[in-house]
Length: 338
Ligand code: PBG
Image (cartoon, rainbow, N blue to C red; front, side, top):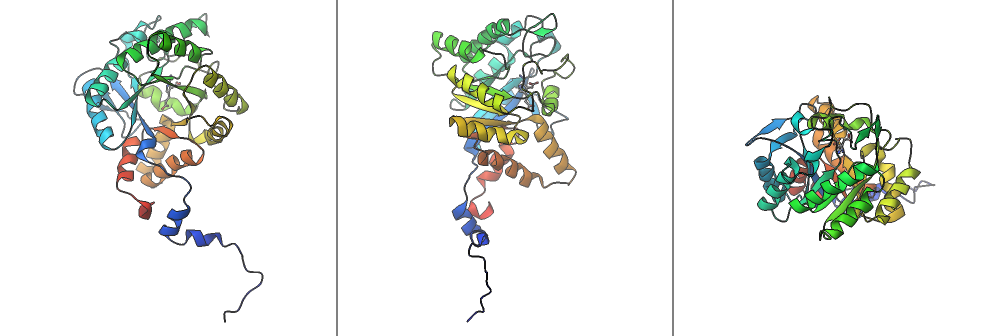
């Protein structure tokens, strides 16, 4: 008989971790390609794929190349893409009229993706910053970002996107009242099947830096976005924003950035049980890629770990620049490699 040592641990939690098979049996969360929304940058031209230095591995693509990327994404099982335009200086004006032009880059990319892959979900961004001379998400009057006049423009922009074939409208501007106004306009315009994924809890974050390079807004932005994006110190306020947006007709809500705000993801999911997404933003992507390129981190490992963290925090899905790379890894994996 084995000598017994008292007190021995009655609960040995290591028992469920002893092999890949037992770990698979008790695994609580799963990540699949179906959880991913891939943000892509579109620029003018034909046959163009241009690297973005602060986002290694991410390209600005011309419309034809976006359609090609949509086919690749569909083959990898990625269900959705989110379009961001890189606008030339000539398309940035005080009245932001390009934002609701049927022929703007974003709307052309939407039509190209829907033509190439009809069942790819296309999400579009509603905010004036790509078209605004001063880089702000709303109109500026006497040094202030004005709310209600901005909402009127955002409504026109959202309707133009729906008319181009967008499946999900993503208001990222943080103006008050925009969800209700956009929802009403979509209903009135027979776009009742178009969803709204509201950037409800969007923080005034330093992690957007590389994105502003990617869309050509870095030089354009005057001042900061603190009068409309959230204070990183706040958490209860995120719940009020989500509650408000759901009551105005949002179908899904987002927390942004992602990794530094996992506590907010969990609170939002627990409080409302609504479809909840996190945006793993450009700066989060850039820092992981930079460390991996230096050999300081194992890039694949931290990519998958960071994405799983969103699932664990209660998110239903993630907007991530890693979408194709993660989907490729997931395609070849089962429980043995998890
Ligand atoms: C702007 C917008 C931003 C991002 C998405 N939409 C930047 C900002 O608010 O300045 C950031 C995305 C990222 O960093 O990956 N409407």
